[in-house]
Image 1 (cartoon, one colour):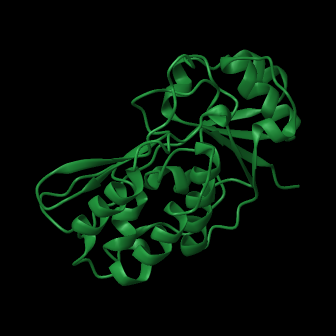
Image 2 (image 1 turned 60 degrees about the vertical axis):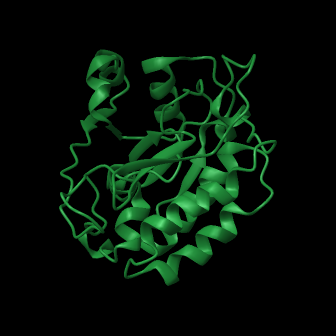
Image 3 (image 1 turned 180 degrees about the vertical axis):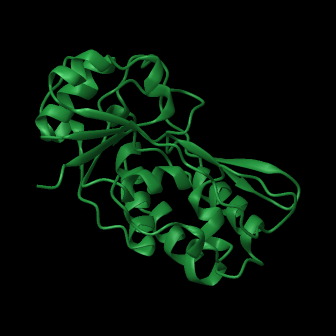
Amino acid sequence: MEKKVVAIQQPEHLPWLGFFDKMKRCHEYIYLDNVQFKKRYFENRNRILTEQDIQWVTVPVKTKGKYHQYINEVLIDDEKPWRRKYLGIIQRAYAKSPEFERYYGELTDIISRPVTRLVDLNIMLIDWIRTHLEITTPVRCASDIRGYHDKGSDLILAICKDTKADVYISGPDGRNYLDFDAFAEERIEVVFHEYHHPVYRQMSEPFQSHMSIIDILFCGQKDQIAQKVFI
């Protein structure tokens, strides 16, 4: 019988290539939406490459007095007229790209929707990208499985048990906090996602890795992404 491979990851905003590579390598992908939101990280922003430099596209969120809020509690701050600026940055960066006409209208439609929670916007964007990358891995939010009071390694292990995982794909940072003995006791194998970033033709040089996934889409280089393969 084939071992069930599970990955768990925060639902980032317009994630990088490695996010989707990990998704393709498992049988179920869990959005870790019930952990603390990190300011100035990748949950409400990401990087794109312009002709001049790397630039951030950011969704403003409400954080005042909400230091301990979970990702699935974060609200978009629509008191700021951010959508026009956000889309303008992307338009200026990719207007001359090979696939601009194909993707920009669809992206504009998603960003323009009256969404309240950041997590809902992020998942809509991830689903849009999944469709274009033909990734059919089942996904669900950790908060939809059950309420968890665990943290760190204990939380990851609890989700793995609930999803009946035989193999857990961890990011490289897992080496610093996972309790490998606890996973071994539950007969759950831990493997690490070591992603080798491809070099592809961008809109400017020199090549910059770890951009948002939309960089490779707009540049018409999505064929550089490996086909689905289970670890």
